[in-house]
Length: 124
Image 1 (cartoon, one colour):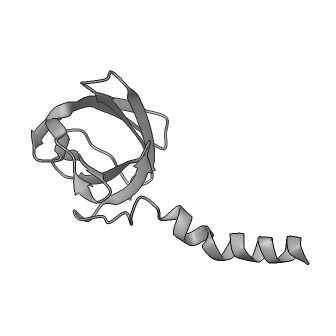
Image 2 (cartoon, rainbow, N blue to C red):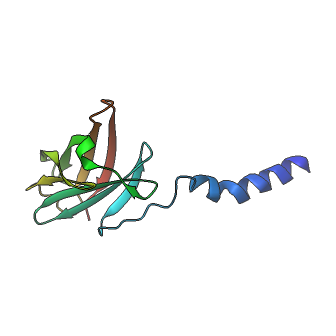
């Protein structure tokens, strides 16, 4: 009985624990995921690949980060471009195409700590 009750409590509180860092909101029409406690929103378009960074839904200064975006097309062809801070929490890999269905790897480097994190997406 105790085990069943404890299991019920764990199941009931799991959604709250999973949202402990706040909800991830895609504010720029892209895909968003949490990468090492940083919200990474990927937006693909005609002018390139854009990345927006947040922490608990608060914008992070893009100037503190660098990195690159690697796109692998369905046929295996790869292309990559550096991520460059634009303004606010916005970084861009200008001119890089990410066709629908391609795999997109975002590599972020924290300039202050040197820590690297990775996020993977499928372009839509």
